[in-house]
Image (cartoon, rainbow, N blue to C red; front, side):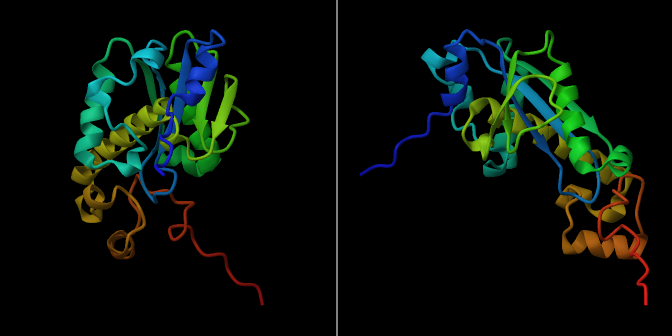
Length: 217
C-alpha cells in the first residue's frame, strides 16, 4: 500500500474555492541563532496553479530545511523572477530583537513582510502557531512549510535572504565564522565568542551572551 501523496495546495485550494484569491504563505528564518537578524517572507502564488500544478521550475519545492543550498538558490531565483508571484521580505536586526524579544521581533518581521504586498492579502497561511498580532486573518499550520507550497516558498525566500546576509557579515566579522554556521550556537561559534566577546550583530539577551544573574545566598 503506497502512502498518500501530500496535497501541498490543500489549504490554498480551500481558500481559492471561496474566492479568496490572494493567499499569502508566511514563514521566517533565524529565530534560534545567537547572531544576525530574523527574516520573514510572505509569498502569494497564483490560483491558476490549482489546476495546472506547480511549474516545472519549482518541482520539488519543500520546506527550506529539507533542501540543499543549491536547491534553495535555484528556487529563490525562480520565485523572485516569476511575474505571477507576489512576495515581500522583511528583517528585524539583533538590536531590536534584544529590545523586544525574539518572538515579538519574528511577528514584527512577518507583519512587515505582509506590508510589502500591495494591497494587503485578505488571508495568510502561517507556519507554526497562530500569530496574535498578525495584520490579516490567518490559518496557522503546524509544519506548514512541508504542507503548503505558499509557506514553503516563503521559507525559501526567508532562508536564502538570511544566509546571504550572514555571508556578508562573515566578511565584516571574519573571526566568528558566520559563513559556516550562519550565527547558530555551534561549538566553533561559542569558542569564538569566548575568545573575542560579542560583536555588533550578536543578540546580547541570548544565552550564553547574556550576563549570568548573580546568585543570592
